[in-house]
Structure formats: structure tokens, C-alpha cells
Length: 222
Ligand SMILES: [Zn+2]
Image 1 (cartoon, rainbow, N blue to C red):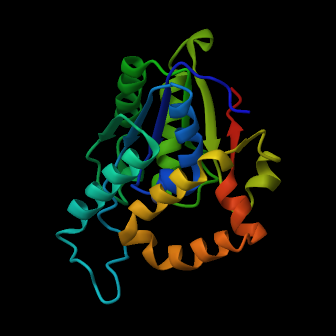
Image 2 (cartoon, rainbow, N blue to C red; image 1 turned 45 degrees about the vertical axis):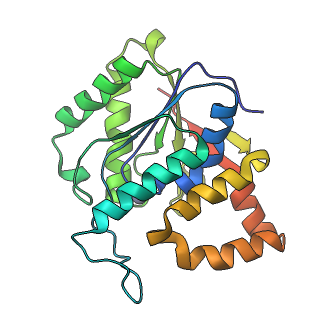
């Protein structure tokens, strides 16, 4: 059961960060009539995957990833997609205060009741950790009573040991086809993996079913 929200704001650094972990949750909110804004910091232009044989070159990768991101957003019903223009793999080097203030500007404008981002320290990639940290710093600037709920995605090996079990587990099986469409939309990054993943999904492989049908979050505690 996913709580009805007034407005959701999703903040991640890379196109495709939304696809595996939260696209089912987003699609469910959209189905509930809740507007969803997705702020994506970079275009993932440093992505290592140029295909084998290569489907593109470094110069064209941002164009491709931008189109893929738009397609993924369409697949799950996001109306308000914002590409913030930061450089891939450099989010951690942005000025902390500036980045937090940019996040706060978006939060103040969008006025979300729920924000979804990465859990800093437990999200494996430095861009992920830096993005989550900036969002938390931004929300911290709001008076406690005005703070939206913060649901964080974590997937480092030690996340359960450190944070305990996720307190929010969303069953998104009703929108699994939309989620798979979102993952497939990022074909420059996911095509090879999706062939095996989709087969396993059709065969009801329990691990893959769990990965597609359930999304977990840790509510950030102030
Ligand atoms: Zn990422």
C-alpha cells in the first residue's frame, strides 16, 4: 500500500538511477493522480557503456542518454522532467552549499510532500552519495514542521547492517510492465542485461521477480 502523496520530487544524478529502484513507485504515484517531478543532475555522459560493437561515441552519448531519459520518464508517466546540467562523475566536487541551495530552490518551487533520493554513504557511487547529501542538507534548512518526508534508496553491501531493514517496501507488481519499459528505455546502458533479465522475469525467477516487483526505502530520520 503506497501512501497517497500531494506531490513527489525525485532527485538522482544519472539517467537510469530511477529505473531499477523507484520507477514502479513513481508509476504508482502517477496512477494515484500525484504529480511527480524528476530532477536528474547529469546526463551520465561519462557512462562507460558505448556498446560492443560501439553504438555511439563519447560526443554523442549525452544526446542519446537525454533521449533515453525522456522515453523512460514517458513510460512511467513523469510530466515534469528536469535535467539540471551538472557533469557526470563530478557531483561530489560541486560546492556543498551551492548544490544544497540549488536543491532547496527546487524544493521550494515544487513543494513536495515526499522526496525520493539516495541515502548518502550507502549508495555506492560518489555522485549518488553527493546528491543524497545535498538534498538532505537542503531539507535540513527548512523548519522541522515544514520538511517533506524523505525516502532514501540504499544498496551498498553494508546498508542493512548499518541502517537496519528498509522501513518502506512498496509492492509495485501492478505496474511491472511500466517499470520494465522504463529500464528498457535506457537501452544504451541496459540492453545487454535486459535480455537475460526479461527472460528470467517471464520464467518467474524469484530473485528477478523480487527485484522488479518490490522497491525498498529508508525513511530519513532527523
Ligand atoms: Zn547512478
